[in-house]
Image (tube, rainbow, N blue to C red):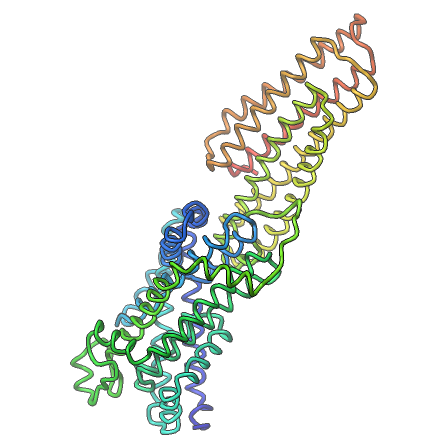
Length: 566
């Protein structure tokens, strides 16, 4: 047995095949995420009002992006940010469990012969269709698909020599006889590899090669469903109580599901056999018989077992979801009992960004965009609140303004750090440009907050020194403030819509604010010469005008970042 294990060819083929499979899975998942863009995140955030809708959303999103881990990590991040409650999150994670089984269903099809053509087509689209990004993304999906199946083919061939080893046959029979051992091995392998799909692929390769019985394969699959929950629990480390409870719920309903499925094991296997054609443990006795089946099968392989395993994986998660969906409330209470305590109230926290999704750049970039939009909305509120303070001199507004200014500063720091970390990932040149634009955008938004602070401090000084502006000066300050506010509101709305056709109108806003500042400043100098205005009020007046003009400048910089000129 040891000599077979140490065989150079076996080790190289197994490692190479697994590497190709994992890399193909990664490329395919990232390509799908790029095609889906930020829409997946928006769907998750908007359509999870109840557990049933949340489950459907979880199925749909995970099926599209082909990564239950990415979906689960996003959900944990939403819960941590307070955008989703525990009940909604559990529903989505239940759905993600079903969505991830689609991968196993795809792998079970006998389409490995298309692996090499898919690699060729994928590379062609990726390299020669750069002008149309969507074609490049489709190329990534097809390339990943091809690498995935090519890796699976190599792994299956690596296991061919093991069929002649009685020691291996005895070991795998032991797994079939001891279901708990099979569950344990499946769980440990998934924790080590950190990819449930990879372990399913290995299980399919072993079973199709004739080394695993159907019973042993099911035990490994059940163990994989427990092992995959480790990803969510790792993602929840360092988060708030609700997020950690979400991850714990993921572990609980999979672990409980595996427990009752083991108790009903013979009955469960009968259901799978009834809904799946062929005998799972049927072995091709001769090469002639294998040739009759086609699909590149060989003597000693099991032609039907892959579909049985895929159906087992899907049916287990569907049954588990149907059982636990009405019990989501009880599951939420159970997690609350197991993880006690209350979260401390924080004045500041990131609502959209979660560093745990950095290994999924398209999702991470969507999060950065969302946090930047939030920053822009706060800046707009600051401008409006500053204008109100200049009008009514209500000191109660200052505490709110100071908190908002502190929040904007913290957001600028956190979003920039996140974008720097994202830029260090493997991202496309187009994504690098978007990251750079967002960095410019958050810096200019932070400067808008700084100028708001300067304006209200000038207003405070004006109030404390009992300085009174003339009616003309008050009107001119109100006018340039309104122009700056309207410009910022227009651009923030454009950022929300991701509208890049706003440059012409932005140039009009920018020009009108600059002209207003110049006209009002010259008018003030004329009033100084005629004695209508005093020097000290005039200095404050000029500084306020200049600050609103700088808000217009930085808003125009945000526009340039939005349209890709900066």
